[in-house]
Amino acid sequence: MPQFCRYRSIALPLALLHATSPAAAETLNEALAKTYNSNPTLMAARAGQRAIDEGVSLVKADGRPELGIASEYGVEVHRQRAIITGVTGTKDFRTPERSISGQASLNVPIYQGGTVRNGIRSAKEQVKAGQNDLRATESSIFSAVVAAYLDVIRDSAIVALNRQNVAALEVNLQASSDRFEAGDLTRTDVAQSDSRLALARADLQSAEARLIGSKEQYIALVGSAPTDLEEPPSLPGLPESPDQAVQVALQNNPDILAAKHQRISARHDVNAAEGTIMPRISAFARGNAIDYLNSERDLTLPVEGSTKSATIGVQLNLPLYQGGRPGALQRQNIARESIAIEQQVAVERSVIAQTRSAYASWQASLQAITSTRKAVDSSSLSLEGVTAENSVGTRTILDILDAQRENLNARVQYVTAQRNAYVAGFSLLAAMGHAEARDLNLDGGPLYDPQANYSRVKNKLLDMEFDPNPGAQSSRTLDIPAQDAQTPPDPLYTTE
Image 1: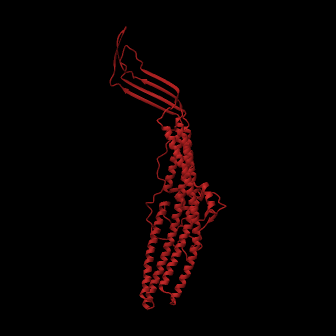
Image 2 (image 1 turned 60 degrees about the vertical axis):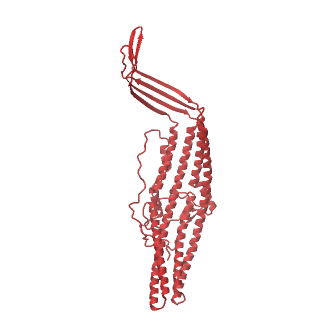
């Protein structure tokens, strides 16, 4: 795991969290490990990289010898008859009725104008670009899992807060009704309490729907239902400034590295296109055999019953005119190289913007945590004061309802700010290229190494070296029950 000694870590300020989670609780590390080993998008990206690896072998095959055998069996449906007259008399001859022939050929490329050499270099750069694209996919999926994990925690807390609010308003409505019966309050006060309770129940239903949606999104990414999610761990390696973050991103962001290798690959493609006008030299060996299967029909004129021949040599192919194809191919690849150059600049711009934006979001979320924490404390104190003042007749029921609503909003904003701070911090690490399995110490077994497959296939020579038919490596979620809005007994991020 990389060392981040010069950077800071972030831990969410959860001083008001409830005590320890149940033993069956799931950690963020476990969720990421499940994703790493079973997410279908990630599995497909790995398979896509294995397909890119084969590009090197395919180009190498163009520079290797070719050996082949061809055979043919034929029957004459119209036989020619010849009468030969000479000093020895007249002789009757017909062509053979049947024949079988075979040919073996070996072709060994010697020089192909540099097209194969540059094609191999281009394919190798494509492999490197693909490996960095796989890193980017992994980082993107992990960012989505972190967001889904924190969404479940946040929405569980918001549902719990809304349930507490509904319960408080139900008590408030009952108290208002009792005081109305005693003549202390008017029907208007009761109607106001009833109206706020109805709105609170509607808000609770919406919050429960959002929680269910967050849980289903979690299942889609992780492959299992969320169970009593624990507080996420501190994030290591967060930078001190946006400039520091950008410097790290320029060196490690996988999108930047992939774009760099795409540009180099495009340059080799240009060189390969220019090589199509060069001469080609190859060595060859051919052997032929024909057997007429004793089907001659002349008793007086001997005819050879079979023939054999063998030839070896060197062939030179010097292209003089190819209809303008080499020029068009070179210009096309020059244009593609221009695209790759501009895309490299565009990716760099995008990464810089993403990194700075993620840093700003992280900082803003940290400040929002402080502000909303203060708002929670102040609104709680205000609610207590308004309730006390109402008891002596200096505040109305509407004042209490407004204070309750303000306190609920402050608590919701507080738990939302905590979620946003963590997600923004992880997004910042992703932009810096430090949010992959190799950076997170996952406990899900050995990490997938794309280089291992490339090393396995890059020098394979035999035509029959086939891989077995694939099967799904990702897990299905059909058997996981539909989620409900049930929350843990002590949801994280709630406040007392």
